[in-house]
Length: 228
Image (cartoon, rainbow, N blue to C red):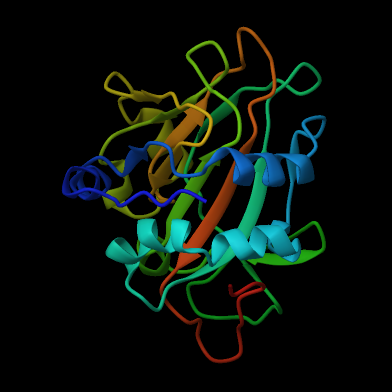
């Protein structure tokens, strides 16, 4: 398993832009192992931290070396999801922020909500402060070029907290950045960064293992669904 140290430049990009590309984070054996577990025929799979190999990856030195400079040594993975665009599942993702977390149980807390259930798991929008301290790590299991519906982000939008639907629609997108990646690369992204993607022009498997990392425990009575 490859270990990529995050550079000062990349740390600055995550602070200013809201994301950064780190090249060659996973080696071929790891990519093959993870890829064999994640069927390219599925557009999305939740609760991947239930899979032992994904749990090992999430706590590995390859991942820790990327996230600890940003979140500290006590951070932990809290969610794993597969995203894929291919011949059977090719869609446009509207501009949005990632605003929810997965927890064990529902408990009414001031300022938290709405609540929902996805794949049998309670999800809630917590405080914007908690979300602003989280990090998403998107490992690319396949190449993703300009024609394959790559991630697009609006630089600096992560610093404004939660945005309303009207604010998202009205936010200028002229300076949006297209985030292409090669197999084995990782994109580190703040969840509140405004992002989306177009449908692929040339659909083929574009598997992304999306891990969400937190540095904070939750208020009393609420527990992370996963903590790796």
